[in-house]
Amino acid sequence: MIKAIIFDLDGLLIDSEPLWQEAEILIFKQVNITLTPELCLKTKGLRIDEVVDYWYQKYPWKNLTKKEVEELIIGKVIELIHLKGEPLAGVDYAISFVRQKQVKIALASSSATKIIQAALQKLNLTNVFSEIYSAESEILGKPHPGVYLTTANKLDVSPQECLALEDSLNGVLAAKAAQMKCIAIPEPSQQNNLKFAIANITLKSLKELNNDVWKSVN
Image 1 (cartoon, rainbow, N blue to C red):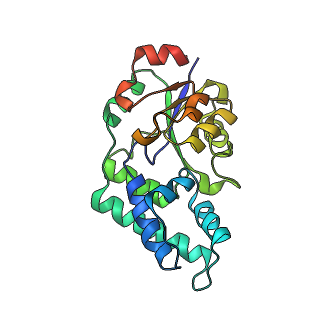
Image 2 (image 1 turned 90 degrees about the vertical axis):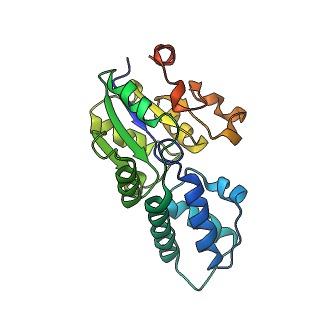
């Protein structure tokens, strides 16, 4: 039986993936790396330190430290969230739906804590979650299951009794590695990606969350 639901943040609750792409394209230009939205997808769902390290390993630079690049990207993402962050379709509905199920509700994200705080404030969701946890506190980010295992531990719920909602393949892999049930809600361009078959069920948006879906994972 499901006793806790754990939401991802970026690309699931807030339409932040375009903001991440905009920030990464802008900041990586400062170290002479030209990214495109398609290239940004290669690191979707990873922590910012892992994103920066991924590109540093391919195209090492000297004028800024990796930490400085991380902080510049984080700052730009927060600025963009405040300017134009928008909820994705069905967020309010999904929150209302899971609240009716009398389960614990948490958030587990690859994003830095200050980005999580900015996004939840922008979406007016600061009081929804009983636990909010960032993978920045883990040795490894998604697809490693650590962020989900720690969140389950904080909720005092066994991972097998948790349901994760994810938009990225790395997130789905992390949830399944933690032995959780997982609903995948990929972005439109990834809807036909067969790799998402690892999820228990795949939806097109949070608006498709209903009692039939609930029964299928419970």
